Image 1: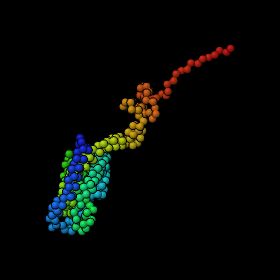
Image 2: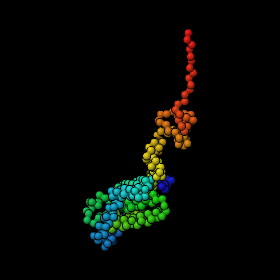
Image 3: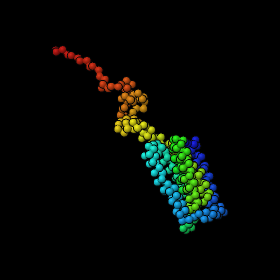
Image 4: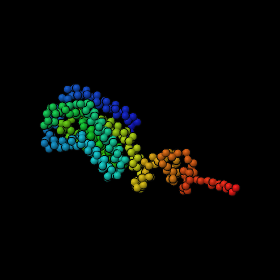
Length: 288
């Protein structure tokens, strides 16, 4: 997966910047008043059908439903595309990115707009910056994008994900789930979360793929499944580290605790004829 050289420092700078700006905006009433006028301008399009549709779209990409969506897409990558490595990379990246977004949202703590039909007290208990549903849509799109291995598939993912993200952003504004600045702030925060997720995935997924044999072809996976003694885990646990590949293919498998300072001829013989013995001379004593 693609990874920045400073994949920890750069996202932290972005998160701290957005978090600081969010706290400043939260304590600036004129900004909130101006954004409330923007939401009020959308009142003519707020029919009952539009509000219901906005609620459904917003709920799909908000916590905790976004994690169910990530699990469903992970299962799709495993079952349909038959790529456990891509599925694990997508899952780790998306989960880390979503958790970063919701963590920043709680740290900023900007009160959400008053949703039609809710009281002011209910709105004050929710946080809206960055917009959680928009963050969820961006995180899922970018996680699928970085896990795509083909250019055509990446273009389709970016196009479809961008369209879905735009719909989610409009639903958040129409349903008064977030302010305009909350929707704008979702992009850099989600990007920072995905960058962190890619870094974590690049550390964890290769080790998982090596341990479980995800990079092997179908014949190799069947061989490891049917013959556990030839699996990667068995080789790591029982094969001497100083034995070369040629010796492994013959009879270089030794149990734990065996002395590794064995003569090469004894380690690489194709056929084992048993222990080497010497003929003991027989001493005959004449009768007295």
